[in-house]
Length: 81
View 1 (tube, rainbow, N blue to C red):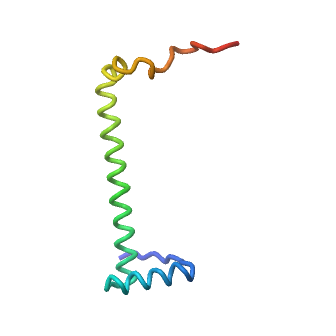
View 2 (cartoon, helix red, strand yellow):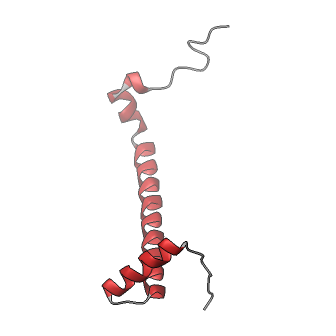
View 3 (cartoon, helix red, strand yellow):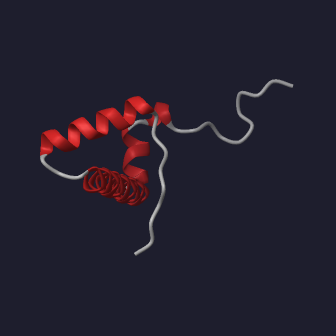
């Protein structure tokens, strides 16, 4: 299995040791779980953003009708010069 060396400050290492001890797990397992949780959160945010983009695109006309003041101005409108 591939591995990754990660450097921590003395304080961070001390905190990791304390948390791992408190949870009854190893530091390696603690860090792996934290990384896995962050990866899952990142993927969920990406999926949510994509679902929103698709929803918004498929309802763009409805949003434009409901919120006409929020629509972009026509090309060049309002420009001086």
